[in-house]
Image 1: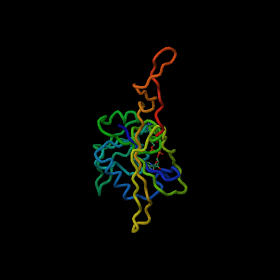
Image 2: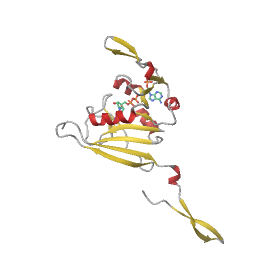
Image 3: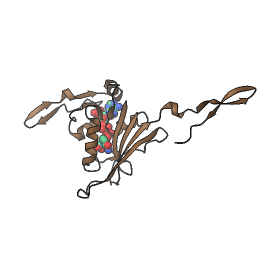
Image 4: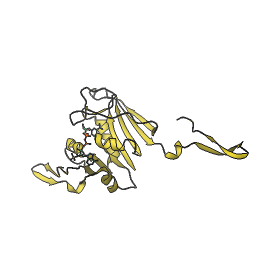
Length: 207
Ligand SMILES: NC(=O)c1ccc[n+]([C@@H]2O[C@H](COP(=O)([O-])OP(=O)(O)OC[C@H]3O[C@@H](n4cnc5c(N)ncnc54)[C@H](OP(=O)(O)O)[C@@H]3O)[C@@H](O)[C@H]2O)c1
């Protein structure tokens, strides 16, 4: 199962100058960590660079055509090899193929990767930051509600003693299964038409 995890403001902004438009929101970060811990996470090379290295306790797959990915990280005075928890592949399809089909793998950005899976992901974990930020340069459109339905919404309000952080909605979207989009046939309902007994079809009621 492939899921996208992203945060966007009320205008759909997700990035500014290669970073997030907002300062780290502690309660969103905690949620993100709990969600992705011990899972595969897939990211574009620029997102990997902006994080500054792999995220611990997760299997990091970096997508890069150029292969220009920093595989060592300075820990104190030592230069540490981060190979064991970081893999580099040259296409998103290869990254997906490496993930376990039995658990959820998370695409964590940035825009180029989200774009590829915006209508294909099984789930979207969207943090809607309830503010607008200026001078952003990277945007995503709204989730297509013909393809995805809201599974849950949880609002987290800023704490009065930490007023610099915004309110957020954590929205989980599930992809609508193909079978739900077909006209539904009630087997017990038939009509007599053109000299034959035929099943009567009904469109699903709007969601
Ligand atoms: N709000 C959020 O939740 C969120 C999350 C993550 C990132 N972001 C923001 O998004 C912005 C970065 O997004 P971005 O789209 O510019 O960069 P990105 O997707 O992080 O990285 C782009 C790079 O990834 C590699 N790549 C992407 N698709 C590929 C493919 N199909 N095959 C092979 N390589 C591929 C290429 O690397 P090479 O150049 O090495 O070939 C490409 O230059 C930043 O502002 C970041 O802060 C926001």
